[in-house]
Every structure is written in C-alpha cells, then in structure tokens.
Length: 417
Image 1 (cartoon, rainbow, N blue to C red):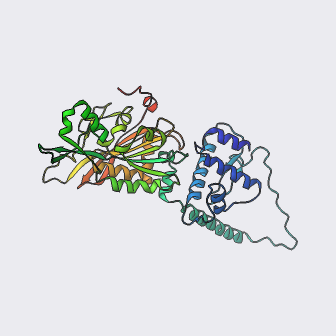
Image 2: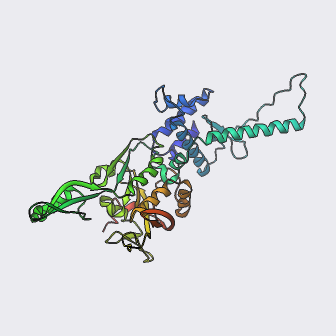
Image 3: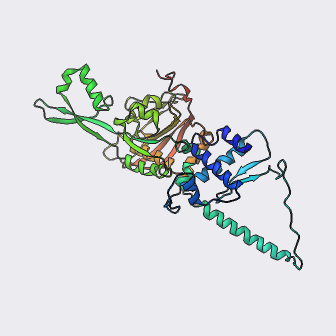
C-alpha cells in the first residue's frame, strides 16, 4: 500500500483516473489471493456489460499493457530504494511484488523447500534439463502469443508521442483542414467563378469583410461551400487506426467550424495543409524554429536561414515528380490538453506525416532524433520531412529538421508578435 501511494503521487499514472482504479483493483485481487479474468476487469473496472467480448474489444489488454509500462517506468526512474517493486508479468492480469535487483528486499524471506516424500527418486540431470527447456519454450510461446494480442496501432498508442492523447479523460477532436470558398458574381448576379482567399476562412469572415467594405456585398456571395485536399482521406485512414485503439469519444470537425472552446476542451489532432491551419496557425508557429512564407509553400529555418520550398504547385507541363514538405508538431494546449499537428505544404507532405505517425518504426526514429520525454509527460517538439512526390502521392521521405519547442509562452501571448 505504501508503494502504491508513492506510485500515485509520482504522477507516472498520468491524469486519467482509470489507471488508478485498475491498479487498486489489481491490489485488491492480489490481497484476496486471486487472479482476475479479462472479463471481470472489463466489468468491474471499466463498467462494461456482461456481453463484453475480449476477442472483439482489446480495451483491457491495452490498459494492462500501458499500466505495465508505467510501473516499469516508475521502477526505473525512482530515486529512492525501498527494495520493493510492483510489476505485472507479461501476458497476465495480476500484480506481483518483487524485491530489489538482487532479489532481497527488506524483510524478504527465502522460500521454504519442501522435504522430498518417502520413496521419491530424484530425476536424472538430463531429464531436469529437458523438462526445464520444455517449460521455458512453453512459457516463451505463451508470453509471445499473449503479447502479440497488442497490435502495432495499440503499441503506437502507448508510445510517448501518442500516449498523452489517450492517458486521461479529455475527449479527442480531429480537425480537418478544409477550405472555405465563395462565389464572385457578374454584373447581373450570376456566379462568375469560385474564390479561395487565405484571409477569408468562414462565412463569418466574409460577413466581417462586408462590414468594412459594404460595396463588396454585391460582388461576393456565400454559397456555404468548403472543400478538402485530396490527402485528407488517406491521412485520416492512417491516423484513425491509432485513435480507435482508445475507447474515448472521437469527434471530427472541419477547421471552418473549429472554435476557441474546441481548442480548450479537447485533445486536438489537426490534419491538412499548412495553409488551412487558420486559427491554429499563430500558435503552431509562435514557438517554432520555422517560419512560413506568404504562399504557404515555403518554410524557413530561422536559425540557419535554409528555405524549404515545395515544388508541388509549380510543376511544368511535362513534369510529374516533385519535392514536398510535411510538418509534424505537438505541444501542450491551454488547459492541460495536447495539440498535435499533421500538416504539409501539399498532399504528399500531409500523407507522409500521417503515415509516419502511424508507423511504429518511424515514430521510434522520431523519438530518438528529438529525445522525447517519457510517456505521460508533456510533449513539445516539431519535425519537418522532405517528401518525394509523384502525382499527389508520397513515394519516399527523409527527416530534415527536428527540434524541441519552448511552448510555455504560447498561451500567455509572450511569443506572439
């Protein structure tokens, strides 16, 4: 009980009360001398009904996997040494108390060795060795089989880059970068053409324009239309594989409907062009080491002066391949939530960042490059990928820039000029 109090006070369990409930439940089962079944945990900890099907829902396995990782993290980072360590054996649903590294915690008692019964003949050494190898192979097989129940997407959800999105009770909001378009009318009121203006991203923006320039009300007309870049669908397909490993409610909204309340009350995952960031743009680049150009096809490394320019919008008639750029940024939001940006100068950039964030090996490379903090701690860094594109598809990419973000002044306005 003392060890549990220390674990809880350390903050390693994150902001979600669910891990605390799960740990307390496992403690109770341990003190009662029983190992709960997956269905029991689903019902008694997560409030699932009796019709819960472990074969169709991995909720319990994912939370047990994450809790095991959190206990290992606590054991590795704690400064004091009580000699005791709480662990969850792989592939099992029980809590185990271990001694320190040499196996002799305070008050540790050597296990009694029962006397051999009368007439018992000790098996020969080779039989013991064979039985031991069979037991080890069987244990390895069972452990491997149970561990493979976690899909790559579920392991991604437990990684430092993603964990803050799922490690609490804050809902998830997927924001898709759409483009608001309006009509330009001719002299008799017919639609002449459709207009996209970076400074007008919603019907409200158009109304505000009319307030300052009333004569434009006869020239422009709101048709209630927006459009999405081609990259939106494949990017969302990749990301939702990770997002749907959680039982959290998930809502999807276009950027044209995104509000300040949304930004404050949700974990936010933005997917789309850099040019469609709109409300988020000033926050994404407030603490960034990159600056965005007027056409949104250029990014500049402020420290070195290097300019990264997408060629997707400047193709010759006989050219199909080009260079594009994808931006990933993540930082704490204004109320303890997390903001994650999956963006690009054009389609190829967006698609590659989404694929990279949904690939375990790519995420591990990113974590090593940036030196991310442990899961459960605030994540704040950015990365830029140079992407080889062909016909609006991403073929290959390399990480050309990565840096931590000093996010502390973003929401206080200190970094906003």
